[in-house]
View: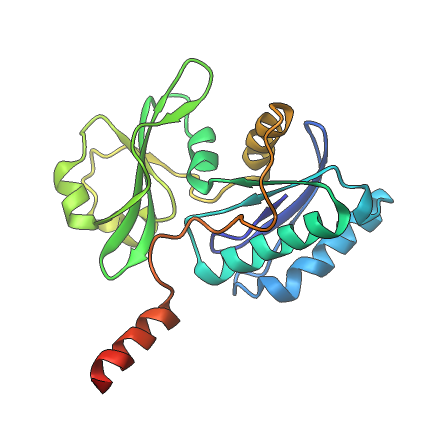
Length: 223
C-alpha cells in the first residue's frame, strides 16, 4: 500500500486483511527520497521479495500534486516490474470509510488553494459509504453557504478553514487516510476482480499544478 496524498505519506504491507507493518514518510513531502528505502525495510523484515507481491494499492487523490505523482509512479513501476495487480484508490473514499459511526452524511474537503476546496459528498449505504456527488472544486465560502446543517465535515481541507466553521458543525477529525482503510477498500476491489492499467492510471487531480499555472501566467504576460 502506498498513500502520498497528504501531509505525511505512508507505505504498508499486509497479508490478506492482516496489516503487517506501516512506515510513515517524511512530513516535508520528500516522498521520492523516503519511499523506496521504507518499502525495502518492510519487505526485509517480512523476508519477502518485491516480486512476491500480489497487488499494490495506491491512493490517487485528491491531494498534493507532487506527492501523488511520486506515489502513483512508484506503484506503477512496482506493478510493471513484477506483474502484480495495481489498484488506485480514491482518497476521499478512504476517508469516508473511516468516518465516525454516528455520521450518515459527509462532506469531504481538501485544499485546492486560492480560497477553493475539493469537495465530494457521501452518504452511508447498507454496506459501505456511497458518493452522492462527483469530485469538484468550489470556493470555500460558496460551499459553506450551501452546506446541509446535518452533514458531517471531514478531510484535510478542514484544517486551514476550521476557524471559519460554525461551532455547530460536526467534524470527522481523522483527516489523514489510514493504512487500515486503504487496505479494506483495496481488498474489496481486488477480490471483486478489478484491476487498473499501469500505463493509464493517473492522479485524481482537477486543477493544474503550481508550475503549470505559473507557466500560463508567464505566457499571458509575454503576449
